[in-house]
Image 1 (cartoon, one colour):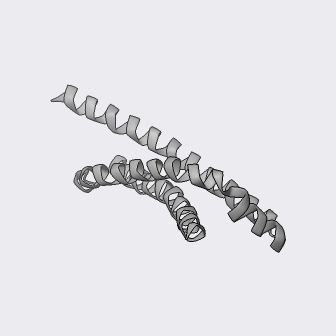
Image 2: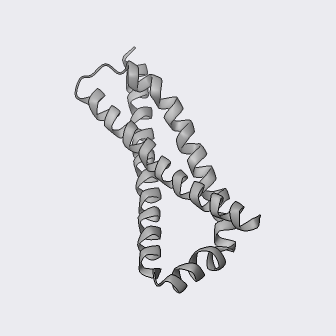
Length: 125
């Protein structure tokens, strides 16, 4: 049973990494549309949900990363080594770390932009 739980955890960990980046990209693209003159209502409606998705993803990345790290050699490294696909495993992990870093950086940037815009709109009122 443990191998199944670890494999599912690892898969969901990868999905969480992708979701963090995807939610950041959606917010970024929507924010750019607002900057270009699109109505901000859709952006403002979607932002809280996308923010919750990002926080849930980040939480799963941290929490799911614990067992993944503990069982890494047994369920990822050893099978990749035996199959001769260590370079593919390394590329996958570089891509996942890059996705998390890019997603986090984009979220920080967009959150700052939203706060600044809210402050400016509040000052203008």
